[in-house]
Amino acid sequence: MPPYQTMPFHLRTERLLLRPWGESDAAELRALHSERGKGTPTVEHTRSLIAKQLTATATTGIALLPLQRREEGDFIGYCGLTIGRSTLEEPEIAYELFRRAHGRGYATEAAEAVLDAARATGRRRLWATVGTWNTPSFRVLEKLGFGRDHLSTEDSGEVAWLTRSLP
Image (cartoon, rainbow, N blue to C red; front, side):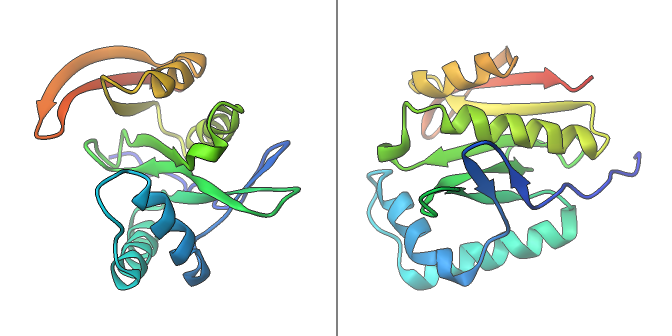
């Protein structure tokens, strides 16, 4: 396995700041997860998710990072790299934003910064998995140059697997 550099954990774009998780992010992450329509997780559960994410980041050198609008300073979601359904060598790019932040190009802007960060680690390819119903995510991934690879069926429904080479 080739050695990979640790991904940068502080990324800045024109409108966004991506940074490491803090305990203060628990309330916002909990609210974001409640928008999924499957109930609201407990504060303890959300704090444990953040702790697990920080531990995984320390182990893997890749991270999902909170997204903050630079001017407003508010948490609007997260974006980054994760093993997810993939591998450490070819991780998945993932993002989730509050509905109020949809349709403004934030996911694309954040994901472009994460692509650059992934490239800086020395990786050659990334994956993305998305429910086939999620048209907005497909538009983001298309703009980023991801192409469809295959479909799988999970308990949650049909999932499209997309991939992108990192030249």
